[in-house]
Length: 181
Image (cartoon, rainbow, N blue to C red; front, side):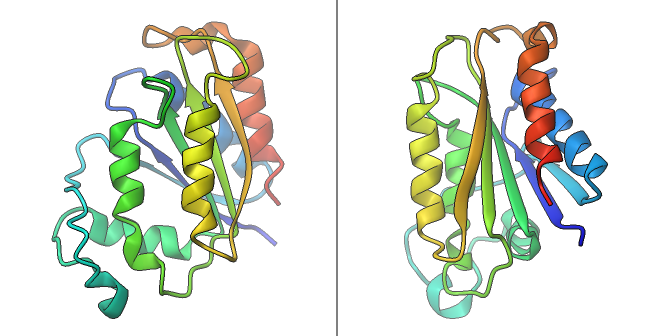
């Protein structure tokens, strides 16, 4: 049975390396027979969470911005893939703000079960994405029916488009998407 895959890309840069990885994951997920939607945080208006917790009672955030529609898409997706550049060994600020604003989902019935991370970084090495992965694992742990299902980091991708020269990274992103069933 096809799964509903939602991919959220958080880089604000043109020809973003993490966004290119997301394109490959989307292609893989489609090739596996899933339905895929990609949302870019570029040009989205997303304000910081105020911490008022009104959403815990109402299921809706009091802030009126682009998160209104995106929160519903997250709730209804079976699989979530987040794509981020790594800044200072961590998730991008825009992705962290986005995740904080998903707080209205906490008391709701949500469909997502598998959560993945794609990241691109200038530095290479196994430890580069550890804190970003840990951050997303922490977010995922707040949703007891969900699990962190895996990640791919593309190191050595500094300038826009650098990841094009990294066939291994793009293949790993494609295979991550292709494995979703």
